Image 1 (cartoon, one colour):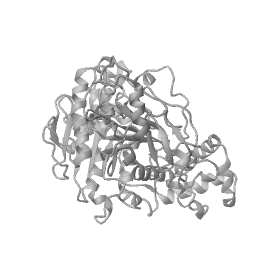
Image 2 (tube, helix red, strand yellow; image 1 turned 120 degrees about the vertical axis):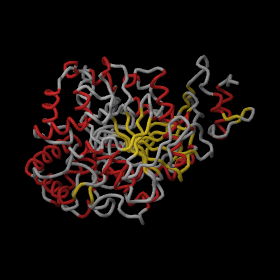
Image 3 (tube, helix red, strand yellow; image 1 turned 135 degrees about the vertical axis):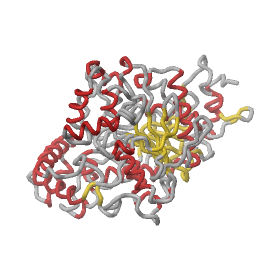
Length: 554
């Protein structure tokens, strides 16, 4: 049965915001978007109205999914709010249209749209950039009181780049519809704006090194306080992210402030079990002030400086500071700070009395994270000697290696997965080492909640088969978006079948804390002793820590 008139739809929404409109015992959403010959999009004065604690918002309904984009969860972070914990947004009268994504957090976006294969494949979505960036997006099957599980997506880009819809694969509609869940994605402060630690400059700025993480906490608090009005269950929230977003998931599960706000965590191709040493971050903060030619009492001048000017200043100062401190172990100058208040000063998850003790986690990496031959046919044909030379140069997270070490490394990784036989594949596998994710999973195993591990190995037939299981490749499979992020998958039945398996596992994990389902082989919990990992490809299977010996050669 189909809705024949928008008037029928509007009449229901006037009364209940489409939260419980019934026709022959079905909700309004049951009648929307399922016939491609019928109207797919519904937007109007009385459609998709929802209440938040700050005022009403108005979205739209597309393919039967209620969509709200750019809902404010915090005030603008410019001026006196810069370097400070997020403040609540100002309440509004009337109904606020929330039908397009909020501004991207301050960052350098130049070069994103160069005419290159990278732009084609990753299809970046960047819009306006400003300090009024504390906005979130919601996709939900209905705004009723069904108490659906909630997923909060934390974007990648390290701690410096990205936004909540950076890639098409981040779109929440399909997973919300398939799993009957509520999908939320957010923007938050990044880079020097989000992580400049001025705690040693002025006590007023004691939290400045962590305001980017406090933004995420504020978004989670918003979810807790408001998501029931969007059909979600605030007592069942899963945080999920990839790359830098995966590290943010680890931070959110550790963060002392998040008790009662986070119930499960999924980290993809990014993870961490430690925040920045505050000795480093606070000294860098002092150096930034010095580089600006200011006194500690003049911090307000940094707050009033145009964000691009401050960004350039802090980036320049950080480069000088890191060069003068070559022994630092920091992967980046700006990131969460181990202040002993929000984040532990030592390794995460080592307290069984902490709220995180009861939070299950799932980790996934890919077999060719930093694969280099996608647009370089010549790399596909390298021989073993050339592969050894590549290994000597190191990878994103390792320095140069000796010839002897490279020979050992090559032989070790040549025996990890039988389908990786080409020299370039072995280089990719070695440089995509699981060493860090295993160390984080082992740290989490100190606590009582279960841990699950996956390794994504699907290779789409793109770029003459050179696409491989690259960094970001698995996102759209988890979210049922293989026919949306088609430049990552090729589209069609084969990736769709794997996506069914992976999205079903994610939905099961969200609902129960266990990813097992009838579409996959039995998925054992990860243990330090066995190291069970689910290989995600056309042939999904469980292996016990297949690269354990190889990692010893790193």
